[in-house]
Length: 476
Length: 96
Image (cartoon, rainbow over all chains, first blue to last red; front, side, top):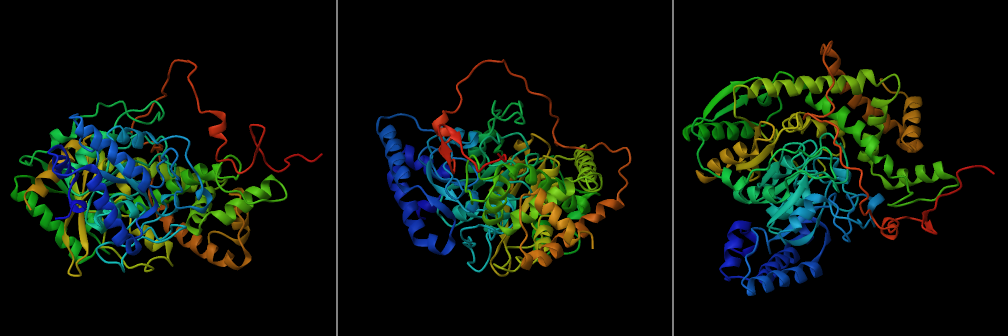
């Protein structure tokens, strides 16, 4: 097995045993990037010089006999909506095409404390708005399992980089499924922690009450290692939680005996692919055979989740994206006066989907429509959250498909935004309720496309998700 | 039809966006499709239901009122499309 295909924890052992060097590992990943990046297109910026220099520093440290952190010297990738000081951060938008952040996002700063090797910044749907990475203003990303298919989105580049051997792990962000859906499409582990677990400082804001940074990894052990690195309260984000962060590797116990796992019937209705349904029922049987109890559960307001999400998220986005006005940073297109300059800038530099969401958001927030749209959505949000609170009174975890189908073809959904939105049915309720969720690979379709299942946990109970996911993975 | 051509013009103006003549019909069509879909919320009775803005309990976060170093002015201006004498420069705002 090539180095670029291994997990972070395997590579850590090879590094500490001096069987490989960080320089050698980094060169191996770059050789893979050179081989496949033309076809996959996972990256928007590649940081080869920095990576080479950083790998050397790790090797010097190992040579001095110093202990290295679990992710030290491990090649990684970061979604291009997470600010990296001095490294271009574009959000896959023309409006930020030349933006060089003057500071690091807290999650990246915390990760950097372990000295992983940054390979580059990954592609996404512009401002994380989309589910296929086709909304990038620069180029599409293709699914490493099938180049005719999308990698999912919005963190499609981060998922494809890990699946394609172009990074060992990566960071993404998840507002309505943007980590879990691409993880499912690309056959990797994608974790969205509880809202507030990871600081959003330096994550370019899309929908502030829903956005959360998380990880893409090749297995559950690596997932725990990345979560250990990035979670924790931050003075720079007042919505980050003060709750204590456990050592997530302690949760890696392959034992689900006594766990109660709910299967919500609302996630198995019309539109779901038969192969997906079969796969999820097989996962349920596997958990049952390992000693978990599978129970039927109802989350009755699931059918309202898409509407709720596609009012709240655009409303927050419309507000957050007001800052792109051509004044303090980002692109500017000149105009006769300030208003014309701002209008020209936004009209020329935002893509169609971003404009669509800004307009839906401003419409839903405008006088005369606020109560009917935005306020109504906030009230339904309460009901959706209550569904989960009620269900979790008697459950430890909820098991669902991550997506209603495997990766679709490039161009298949681009002409109809609403159809694309409906893809998010299994993932958006989790963001609406602020809960942690993971997508774990569970086999392939007949067409050899990866499938994933989703585990949803109680707020701040990432550990139980990791335990069950680890048990599943250990018993394949 | 939930949203008219006039509505689109108003929303675009609020959003500091301009809809080109040739794209107006498609924009209206897509927005109406989405707004028609989200109508399903109206079927739910939400009387006496409190709105939720954040899923987790949130409260004001206070800190000591201490002076701390902040971002350097040059660095803060480093991404400005146009600057002069340490300020962001924009086209004229007021008529003279």
